[in-house]
Image (cartoon, rainbow, N blue to C red; front, side):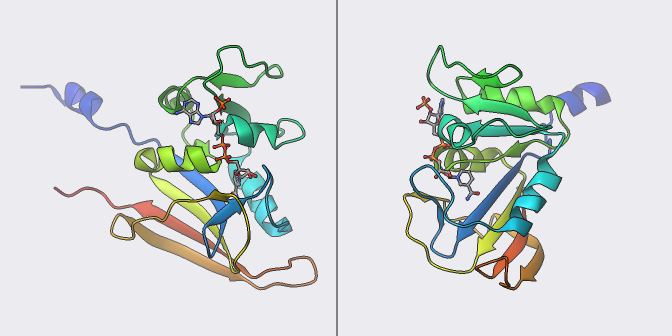
Length: 180
Ligand SMILES: NC(=O)c1ccc[n+]([C@@H]2O[C@H](COP(=O)([O-])OP(=O)(O)OC[C@H]3O[C@@H](n4cnc5c(N)ncnc54)[C@H](OP(=O)(O)O)[C@@H]3O)[C@@H](O)[C@H]2O)c1
């Protein structure tokens, strides 16, 4: 008979691993290693949510930034063995290793890009998705999510205005607990 403590230790470790993404109606997230829109309120929300936390990303997304983002622990995934980064940035050779390192954080984020989102979906507990209401031309996609598996728990619509060229919505999805 396992003791109560052993029981706790063998349970799946949920650590609120959250995918954060901005995606168009036709699932585009980027083009030429850059974003395809400039939505100030979305960037502010990204900063507010991720500040103080681990942000896990693919090597290409890391290289899309002019420099590391302030006040966040960057965990960069690459297959390269000698990938050089500025001091403080953590480099790992697998998504699993990145997730393991980020378990020190009660709210780690997966911040992209397309390759990493696709591989990280099975590990994620939550998605903070900004739906940009339009169809865009691009070269990088967010995978379709299975709405039998993901439940929408929050939605907020923001209209286009003088500083935002498109309507967009902040949508939170939580992964259904497996009841089987
Ligand atoms: N709209 C948004 O919210 C959002 C967010 C983030 C990024 N983006 C956009 O997405 C685009 C970049 O996405 P992307 O799909 O091209 O690249 P990415 O996912 O950022 O990075 C891909 C790289 O990650 C590494 N990698 C991937 N899987 C790995 C694994 N299992 N093990 C070890 N390393 C692995 C490889 O690096 P090496 O080649 O070095 O081995 C691979 O080339 C850009 O346009 C960016 O602006 C959009």
